[in-house]
Structures are given as C-alpha cells and as structure tokens.
Length: 311
Image (cartoon, rainbow, N blue to C red; front, top):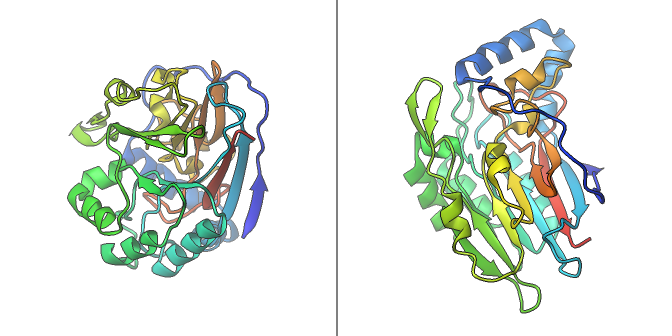
C-alpha cells in the first residue's frame, strides 16, 4: 500500500468556469470508456484493467478551513464508491481496505455511498450480507456514518439501507447530528442523493435537501457535510467548514486531454478530484475504491482518504 501526502495549508481560488450544460451520460461514458481502453496499448490496457484497480493508497490531507476552529483537532477516514463485486472489489479486497481503514485509527469514519457494483462486466457478485459484515468491522470513537449514492438509489435503496442497518451504521439522509465531547463538538450532516431518480434520458430528480439539513444545526459548532456528488458545492454556504464527496472516481481513466470529458459531473474537471477551494469554502473529493461502468482504472488508483482537521 502506498501513502500519498497531499497536505494543504493555504487557501486559494478555484480556476474553472461553470459549463453551460452537462457533458456526460452513462451511454457516453460507457462508449467513451470502452473506446479509450481499445485505443491504448495492450500493456496499458492490462495495467488499467488488472493492476491499478487492485491497488490501494491512503491519501492524506491536513487543513484548517476558515470555519473550523484551529484548536479542534479531528481525524476522519473517508471511504467512497466501494462498488462491491468482482473483478476488482471482491470480498478479499473489501477485507483489505477495512483493515487499512482501521489501522488509521481515525476519530470518525464516513462512507460516501455506492456500495454495490452494477455494471454489466461484473464477474463475481458479493452478497449484501458479506460486504455488510466487513463494513461492520470499521471502528472509530465517534462511529461510522454513511450516506447513499446514485447507484444505491437506482438499483436497490431498500436493500442497501437494510444492510447498513444490520451493520449498525447510521444513515444520514438530509439530517445532522452533533458529535464529540464538550469543547470539541462538531456537526456531521449528510444530504440525500442529487440524482436519485431518473425522469428522462440524461435528466434526474434528487432527494437532497440542503437548506432543510442545515436548518437543523442549532449551535455555532463547525459543520462537516457529506454529499455523494460534488456538483452541489457551489450552493454550499461558508457556514460549512468542509464538504466531503465521492462519485467521480477521480475520472477513473485519466488519459491526457480526454479524461475531463468523461468525469460524471456537469462541471467537468472542476470538482473531479482532490482538495478544491473556492471563496474560502473547502471541498475534498475522493477517488473512491471500486469502479463504475467498466472495471478499469488508469492514473487514479483506489484510495482511502485520511483527513486531519485543526492541523
């Protein structure tokens, strides 16, 4: 396992303009992804399909956003986009990342949705009970908390909710909880998925309620917000110290000049991956663990994110 240190200490401004319309549909991503793999050399294709998806890195960030007290230290392990199922997220791989996550000994563990693999190339199913038992092994003093992703909503939200409930992992859906000891408290909030329901080709209706969720915050303690898709970030107020997102897989297949067009975001590369700062608001987007549409990764290995706040 590799360790990547991406320590952030100073704020900057975002440099990407808002695009006029979404660039991505699942059909385009599937067709484009298959074409990209076909155009690469045999060696690159083998690496993207059989080597990189099986790796694991821990990506570390240390930051103190403006809305987070400097004397309030908190460590967070972020796990996103598991997509349980072979060839690249077998039960053995899930056990390995759970062991790695527990070894970080964070104060808090958060799961950012998309728990099952649904793509047509799946070679080995992982039963809900099996991945649920592995996630139940995650330990942290302030608990393990989850939100749902778009694939959870599109395929079997009831089944995923049941599995998380059996694993005793609380699900945040447009609500917030106050955590921590006196003098070290913070709000952990999670919103519903932004593209939960397909209403037409390329059009979706969400179940997210950002205003309703933030209205539940009754003290001046800092706020940590969980979202699946990062596209809501322009609407998040400065009251939120840090927003955590997944969904994009960091682009999943990052070939020069081409990959931003296949990021599943209406903003292209703007919120594709990593630590984003705009107007003193902070967002961290995880590259996630599993794969979507096609079982391949290139240039963005599976990762667990470890964050130190109040660094």
